[in-house]
Image (cartoon, rainbow, N blue to C red; front, side, top):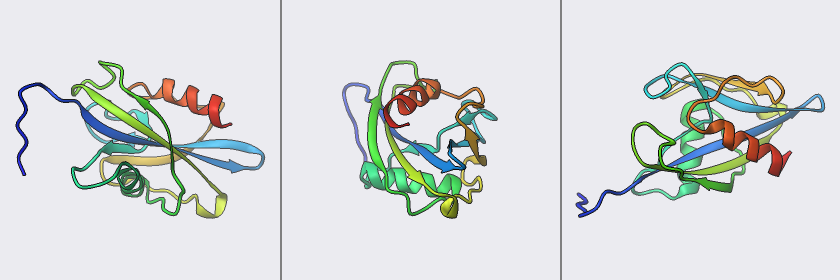
Length: 143
């Protein structure tokens, strides 16, 4: 089905902030981006919402495609939509969060993620997009 609109429309993405509690410390899951924009930089797993899926289904799909991680209960945390947050164009991100345990923490980069890794919250790399803002809010709200 083709869509034609008189006015420009924003794109919608989902991002996943996944926490792991291990040895009384919290870690967060990040992927290394394998393509433009921010190729080679760390970010949350996520991507564009398909036309025929719910936001929750999109978040689960992107998380599994980019990290291999499944069986995570995801909840919506917040919607980020500042203009200029994505150099590809006007993009609104619906951020989801979840928690896992060491028995369900094996990850591997896939799809457009060249790598997936757990990072200690006190030793985070520079993040792509506005993901530092998302991280700050997630820590304040959830940890």
